[in-house]
Amino acid sequence: MLPYLALPLVGCSRTPSIDILGSFFPAWLVCFAGATLLTALTRLILMRIQVKLELGVLAYPSLTALFAFALWLMFFY
Image (cartoon, rainbow, N blue to C red; front, side, top):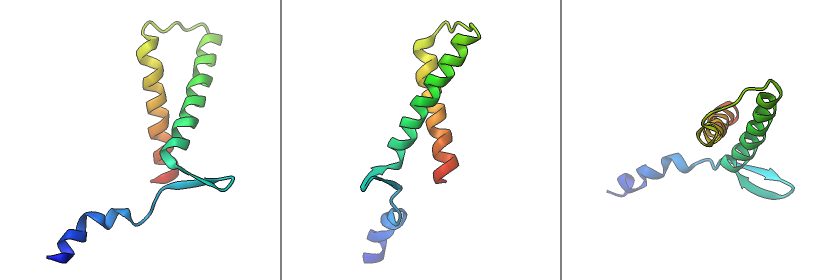
């Protein structure tokens, strides 16, 4: 009975965290910060080539999520 109770904890062997100046930050937080910067850069590029987004309220959070998931897959999977 005891081995079955430990079965859900098998995936907890590695904590995805990053050491930044002696403090450990969760990896998702670092990916989110990078995704926010990439989204701001994308917005600047779109403004420079004069592309107007009709639903910016949906587009920019979606771009942030896309970049965050892509960064997570590139660096931590």
